[in-house]
Image (cartoon, one colour):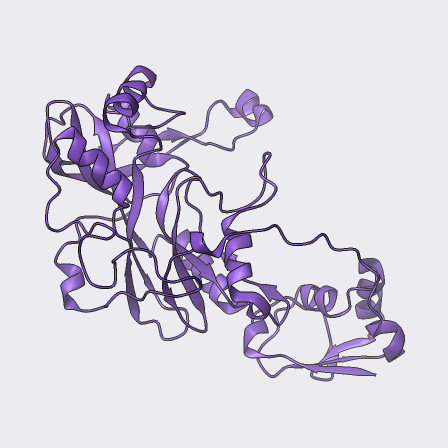
Length: 357
């Protein structure tokens, strides 16, 4: 007989998922059979695979303990090599670690990306603490590979559940800094243009036509010249490449955008101002903490390289914009290897908020 008591981290987890994780050597079909023939009980009562577990629930399993607990032999590949000097931690506690993601680093593997991701970097930083009760630290949301800035990583399963709800219901506020081509006719505005569903299958398009989704981006011009505009923007919806697609749609593509941008313009700004990446930076994120529900405001300063591009373009950076290595204690560049930076969270944080995305 095996017996387990559900911890706070497993609160809300489905029974079948708990069993798969706890008894990895038992085939899934056999786990379901054990539930069906009442060898698995929750608090002494008959169980169902899909039922959600609660903290302090007791799971009892009838069977030979040595057989059930024996781990299958596995040959796990070594973790990818990462350089912890690439990691800037903006905030960390027992529930989350918030980082300033560098441009050019993918969040997850996929589409030819096999390693050196944010996942690899953060798990290497956390070491043995990267996994807790079967849950491995994982990003709670995504930003584009070429976009830099604030990214939240959940360290515990309940934190991931919390952030899934927060981002699905648009309860987080995200602010971006972006450089776009041309002079915008208005100093602030709303781009309210539907965008086609990014992951719609060819079969779905053939059957239903292109699925258009509502998308809204608010922006405020911080500074501009006749050639470019430095903009703070927020998104009220979370569509793939929303900021990039919206500004391209109104004739002001994002500088350095290799997919939706103006390619001759990109070549020109690279040659003249040294811009060799997408000029899009997630500078500020506001969200309720998964444990205390306290309002957290995390800021990432504008990378020094992007600030230099603005200087070469003749764009005056307003005092409200923090620049790495130049302004604001706590944002004076990269911390020592493995170190962390936690910005102050006080009333002053509200003063320079111009948007979110």
